[in-house]
Amino acid sequence: MQDIFDTIQNWMQVNQPFATATVIKTWGSSPRPIGSTLLINQDMEMAGSVSGGCVEGAVVKAAMDILETGAPQILKFGVSDEEAWAVGLSCGGAIQVFVEPFPAFAKMEAERQIWPALQQAFNNNEACILVSQLDAGTGKHLLVYPDGRTLGSLPATWSKAALVAYNERKNQLLDTDEGQYFVQVFPRKSQLLIIGAAHITTDLVRLGNWYDFETIVIDPRGIFANKTHFPDPPHQLFVDWPVEVLPNFTLDAYTYAVLLSHDPKIDDQALHLLLHSEVAYIGALGSRRTQQKRVKRLTDAGFSEEQIARIHGPVGVDINAQRPKEIALSIMGEIIKVQHAYS
Image: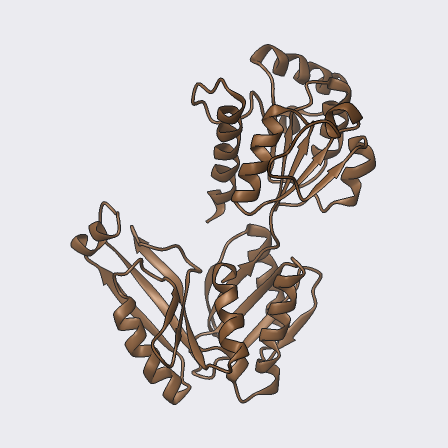
């Protein structure tokens, strides 16, 4: 939903009622992943997508009825091979789409509070999880925060399932004795921690910004941190040692770290912190020989084989990269591969 956040804000400002259609289940080669959202207002204007064009027409037609009655629906579609080819797929699939009026227009006060809370979370880059009841026809929801706080009309007991989905980094359809629910994870913007300022760093920052990461560069060497020219600057730049900076960040499953300093005193200091954390990715620049020396130093420092194996070194997808921008591309490719491993 973050990608259509501006449209939601615009329609809310003019008090334009609209429905949301969300992909809640897929089979085969579906055009859009679970959690993809389409907005449809009363004028049949659209934002977002649930199928890349295959079933949008039918979803819009259903949304008009849903906006009239206020009763959510689950729509089921099969995507033929011919339709799949039209959106760049090699074969067809099937999807389920949940269509409902946007909670901000609900009659229940607890439901209307969902949107302002979501808006605040998005604006503050704060993670949250939305639980939607699918089969009661009432459009009940629960907004859950990683610290356990809840808001909405569903029982707070659903926070446990929401937090499981958050930790698994995965939108989930749940069939339970109490009914069917969809859990949608809205993570904060992923952090890209780059240790060391150099030519590769400038290109990696550019890519990180482009792919919507919060880019943070850390380098205690002032001549590198202050003299490196960033055509596309990082969100934050620290002229400090990793041990002085990293503890101030949330080193969780939405954090990705890359070591580029070429200086073991700097890189190893960062690794000693990162290997004890839950960051999703740790990449380290250097040749295979450099990686072997790094492994020995970490082994001597008491790190286990399992911990050391978390390091992607040499860093990046093997594309025979030579120039700094090519190396940065290979690193970003590997990060995105890890990022979407949970989709």
